[in-house]
Image (tube, rainbow, N blue to C red; front, side, top):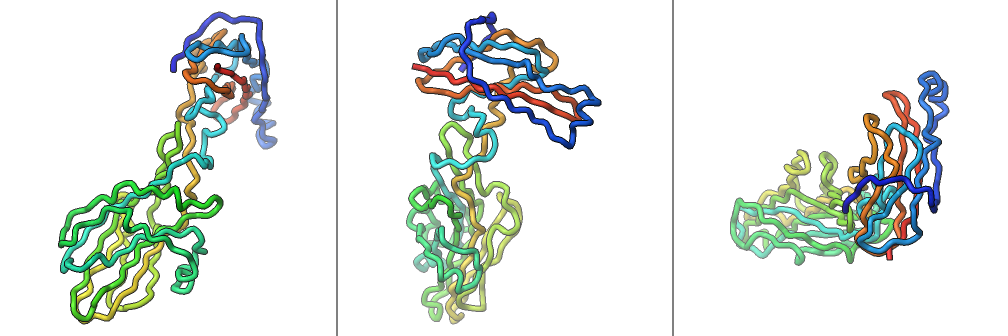
Length: 321
């Protein structure tokens, strides 16, 4: 995409929405400081339709301190500048795991997903929920002792998403033949639950999680249980030590908090600066739309000081054939 500044043209077609960001709390202060909303700000386009690859010329009038622009293309939409919910995303889950000590058993770990768990972190609460086993979707350490992290790979969870329901992750440790065989040690970490919405940066849903990421729920066995390293997301580890021979059987769960998996991060950082307070207001602004479609281009005009800001928003519909 590219843009340039060109001469003002009076032949305009326009659709505008005026939004004055004025709070009653600041009315007196605004008046004293002399900050006025840029009510004279206007934007319109020259033609009703354009062809893909042609620059669209936006004609500008008024003289606000600042002007920013969202083209309306995917990844550059004003309505999606902050957090928003999207059904267009692809949900992936990835984690690291490692094993140590006596690891000649079949794997005794399960990776599970639920969308109807109520958040009751008790044996009864966990058993009441429906859990889907996704262990086979993950790459796990080989059936030998190792101290090295193995990356699970990106596990697609789109088929398990339920609109309006949070998603819970769980790891279940079940001992096998505990009377005759030492059990495996498991260490899980670096968990990334990511929503990928076309046109937006990948949103790491778990990226800022620290304490409270998981809770332990014991079903059976008192000798060993999950322990939680409550570091940052990058150092967060779930550890279950290896049961020795003749220890009682274990059935131990560690269950995550609920995650809003349709949520995505907006594209505020993608806003284009048309004018700053140190520059003059251009008569025109142009943007190149590369794909056919109908786009809602949005311009935000802002007058502000360190205490007060007032803005006017103009929307212009652009049709690219």
